[in-house]
Length: 436
Image 1 (cartoon, rainbow, N blue to C red):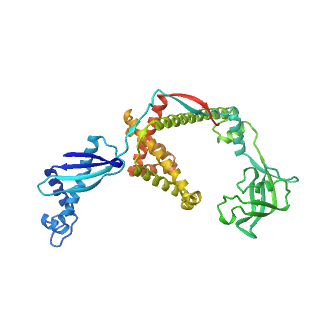
Image 2 (image 1 turned 90 degrees about the horizontal axis):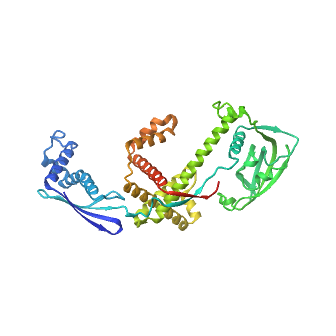
Image 3 (image 1 turned 30 degrees about the vertical axis):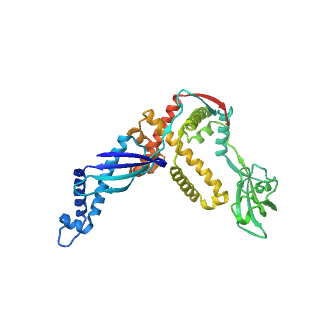
């Protein structure tokens, strides 16, 4: 087999591939036999139809086409391997010539990944945002546990405060009519953690049980309902109950309740929290280091990304965003119209370019550094993913193994993690203060 390669604009490669006539004729005979097996013709047993009859029935061109489909994968795979090509898309056959007794010639086009020229990515000094646990982090975690294990107690004889939970009836109206879904009976609200519109929870403070009153509020200008955007509203309230939060004591019993008996003392719990905080601090700083070095390497890499590659990635991001919006009951197309099509398109394009550069740079470093993804690496990663499904672990693993694209994504993820680890180990990092 011989090949002639020509590079075209837009990172398109054109290949003229010649396949020897003996191999082509062998493929034609196999294609003829394959088609014959599935052909039903009166007077002939299935699979025993003479070649001339098959050719007459389905057409010689159809048999040639099948032969080319059978020949092409191996032929093109050899071209890719011999020329060390990185494909951005699957190839397509533009034309072919297949005549009896002659070599087969194919003209194939394929989009290639752009060339990546790396800058320095080893033994460089990189600043990263350092994360530090707060000095009172353990106390805050204990306080969170106490809040989680707290109980609510009904109180009487006083007015509501900003830390209470209150039970009340309400009826809302705006623009002279009742608000759809704006009324309820016996509703309980945590005044310290309200997700109502601004001013509503504040309006419930300073009232007594049995009191009836009205809260005047204004809907935000960006409220999801067109009818209520910026609208003045009134809520009639009847306060039914006041509940205050009672925190458990900070003792060994708290540790036992918080860990379902796994820890017996408060000191054990605090030691466990300390260990978690230290591990979390290290993991966060490793992620920050990884981001810092990758950002630097990507910024210094030279990559001329073709427009078609960017458009495909933009389409992928849009589809991801659409699916995410649908899962939240939102209309993606309406959202981007409200945000502004040009603004959203620019944001998506920037994200697409960032993703492509990140992927290409990692692939390039992996190739230069001979980073290998072993079968055991992929299997371990699949196990980690599957374990997240609990009882459905085996089912999840079966689904992953059945999907080649899932295996490819997992392989890329493993390679990315190995490259990131290598970059962290081979560079110097200088901490700079960041947010807690």
